[in-house]
Length: 506
Picture 1 (cartoon, rainbow, N blue to C red):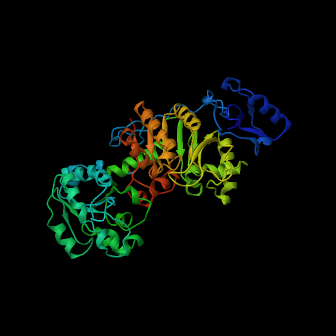
Picture 2: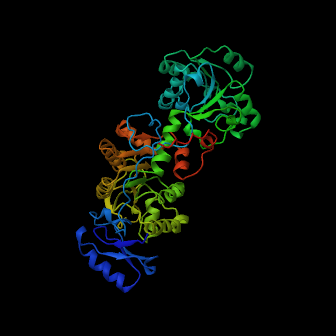
Picture 3: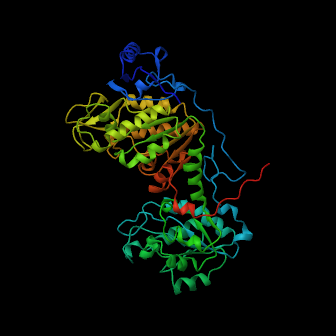
């Protein structure tokens, strides 16, 4: 796609020749979006020199009402219909535009497939516990309930497994015993517990199970062979079961004995409802989105999001960047960033990503103003300045009100949005406004039919803090797994599952 450039209120002015400089000067004198001058891309503009900067956008003419948008040669791609194949939509309140993934799901198994069968279920019950070993957040337990209930309602014997924490061998504080009362309460039956995940005790307890019952095995990571994906250990885990269900998206990016190894011994091996929903949204809706499609990527470092940004540049129409990473992009463009966080070894990469966005016609937006502080502390002195005017000794800790307004207006044009990473140091109230504003904006857009996907990590904490988590189309339960899936990487725990049957043509 040929890229073009426009200069407006954001005053992004490139110069690579007298002609382009002249065009830039004339257009920057206007504050009206309607008077923008779009300069067709040429080899001379391939590596432009930044003359002045007050924000960055690079992209498409459909966003023409923004005066600080690059013009694109082509209109945004029309809405892409979701490729349903006559299968269920994922569970949850928002089911818009979901694409069915090519993995077999637990919902494909009916009572005839499940009644009396021993089902090995790998869940992610890695919940936080306090010093008294009381659960402080049961989100992951609640997320596992639909799959377990489906199985017990269809007469299966559920052998439930999970890890908890990062134990080095058998560690008392990482036993799964504290989870039993809450699991029993949510499932409406008494959950039994084994003191091991393999061995004679497990075999005896499984043999005594009734249809529709649940047995929770001990922490699978008490054995070092689990994380090594030892084949013999996987065989022992699988020996007490007839089939396998993986509902642990948070560990699907790991090839462990309980997530990948057991699939070599248990068939069918299918996705649970939670895992399927993660795939439907993070892979399906992202690969075939309703357009315009925007991604919001934040966080402190470019290095931690390189793969995500590069992958998203292949798919999105609009990319909004926030968080500490923006200062590496600013410095790469020749701006002073004071004492803000900068990855000096990633300056060239930042420049490359900007050029890649321009070449692909992606509207890449950086904040036009930032909230700066004189120290990294919740009680720091702060003020709002243009992104091009950060003084020495001050650091940027949030995006400013002008950026919030511009970002919000860009998001108003979209049909699908994915968000990964905060806009600032939202743990400090003084620097939480940008992140909270984005959370509220996505909640508002979700109510209007926009697909909103929260891609794990701190973004989840942000929407929960603002109290709008239930407004989003989907909130991912995975951290590293979410990032790797967005990067386009193959998740071993997913790849090991059975392929879905091909749809029958109408």
